[in-house]
Length: 172
Image (cartoon, rainbow, N blue to C red; front, top):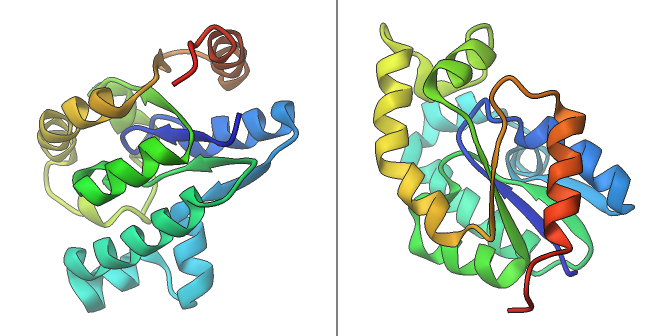
């Protein structure tokens, strides 16, 4: 298995589950947003403020392409990484894709105190998350090899399910 790539909305557990999964698989863990922050020396909200979402998405596309060309990583992507067709193609060619699905209610609960999410700086974050899911859920499903529910489940249980199901996938 080349890479395992986690996609899904903010608050679905991609970073937490990704770290645990990488440890179990004895692979390096990479988070595309953290890699962008390290490379630029700026956090994601600052990039959004200065360059706008379009500028951030350009940086994200370059980073996704670079990381998907790696071998032997577990990659946690940003929630919007699937918006660009170029990213979806890079992700598909980069490894097995696991969509970590979380309900809007669960996302809201998990992100309510996180100030590092520029898209949620809104009077109605629940509406924002619902609107994002309408657009993004079909894209996550389009590229996913596996869909795993994360609502009300401990991260270790989710990791165990991913490990069990990865081994049953037919070769591509």
